[in-house]
Length: 106
Image 1 (cartoon, rainbow, N blue to C red):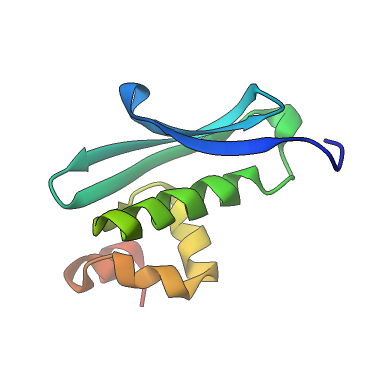
Image 2: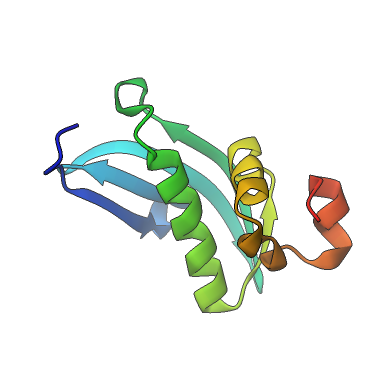
């Protein structure tokens, strides 16, 4: 990926996922399920040839920022997102206190 690659992360609600594109090409996605007041993050996938470029982290941050902006609680079932949240504890408050232990979050 060159320095000038255009990276865009967006919600694709018709596919129930957030998607990241590089120069217009789908590079990865984060599948979610939503209910009133709640966003469950299920599975993150980045195409192998786009790996190692922080795109999964961009998806996680975008999803969590969207949840915060919409006032949604988050359940990070996706192991990648769960680990990302552990490295970015400022996002843990999105997980309801009653569920944090289930995800090994403090």
